[in-house]
Length: 333
Ligand code: KG4
Ligand code: ZN
Picture 1 (tube, protein in one colour):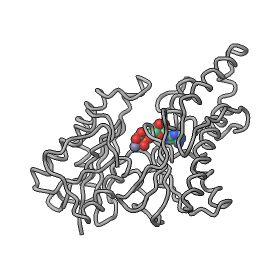
Picture 2 (picture 1 turned 90 degrees about the vertical axis):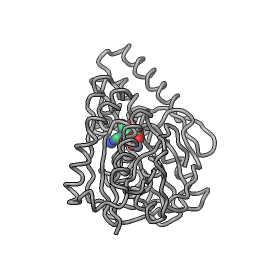
Picture 3 (picture 1 turned 180 degrees about the horizontal axis):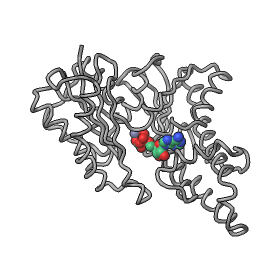
Picture 4 (picture 1 turned 90 degrees about the horizontal axis):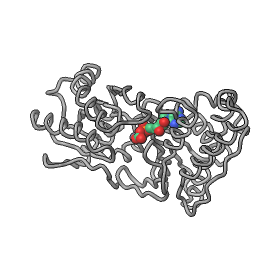
């Protein structure tokens, strides 16, 4: 009956969760609103706020889970990828906590954890499955053969899908992070109002940097004719941009499903909270006969619940790390 405490601090969410015998019994997420003032995450500020948040978040998670420190069996933490200074706070805390309580340490890869979030609730995907992992920093199609046997079969060559959402939002003068706002305004707009060119990239890879530039030029040109263009057409612009991004994401996912002859398809990461992407996947489940797996909203964006479930699986496999472990800003599977 292992009870695992998990720490996530890779970017701008300080999160602490408890996993009690495979069930997530607490998932505290302290958001850092300070970055809104700067239009993006400021790494130095993120580290400082993690430092302030981490002890109260741990205390809160233990209280919610009704678990005493003495009942814990292991401490899991995000080793990477992420912002180095932000990771350092979580890694240092986890190491000290484990040392003080004489508990084993479990290092978790953040991108693997996004995928393993599917093992928190039912229905759980069957191996092998394909997972489109879409976040602020990554866009990957992953062939998942087992809990920790994963292969990236396609990925972005430049910007991530989340960046395409956030940078479009910035062009439209919406606050950071703009992805959820584009989703919100898109609900009242026509997805076919404007067309944006789809990148022509080989294999199962993606590219979003040219797409972002095409939106920038489109808005600039329309504003020359009508300075109120964005304000008057915000819903249609958001709906059209979202429709295009989702189409680009789905096309490669369909190609991958065909290539690997797999119809168990999952999405993960912050952008998997997007309603357009969730709807498109549901439609594909009907038209293509896919078994689709879409995480609960709580486990889409960064959270320690996903670190806890990954940590639980590693605990069962006896995969522990020593006290000399350090964070990794870049980290492969
Ligand atoms: O996984 P995540 O929380 O952090 C990273 O590991 O990057 O992903 C954050 C990204 C941001 O780019 C944010 O704008 C995007 O996920 N996002 C969304 C939505 N919710 C979060 N993008 C589009 N629609 C949403 N509803
Ligand atoms: Zn993430």
